[in-house]
Image (cartoon, rainbow, N blue to C red; front, side, top):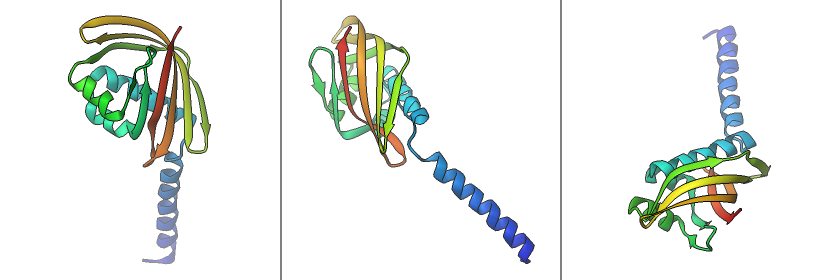
Length: 145
C-alpha cells in the first residue's frame, strides 16, 4: 500500500476511534435517556432491560417507606406484585459530576400493587453511576407531593 493510501486509512481509523470514545462518555443527555428507558422498562415489565440498567447494590425507595433491592424490583414486576401502567414525568433536572448522575423530577404514576390501583403524584430522585459504558441506577427515592 502506498504512503498516500496509508495516510487516508489511518485518518479514517482515527476518526472512528475518536467518535467511539466521545460517544461513550457520561453526560446529561444520555443520563436523561437512561432514566426514560428505565421508566419504559418498568411499564413494559422488561426484566432483561432492567437487569442491565440496575446496579446490584440498588436501593429503590418508594414514597411509603418501602425499600427494594434490584432482585426485588425485577421479581415483583415479574410476579405481578407491582404493575406500572403509566409513568409521566415533568421536566427533569439533570446533574452530572464525574461518573455520578442525578435526576430530579416530578412524576404522575399509575400503578397496580397487589390488585389495588394507585395514582400517585411524586417527587423522585434517581442516582445513577456510569459503569460499563452506560448509566446504571444506584438509588431511587420518592416522596408524595
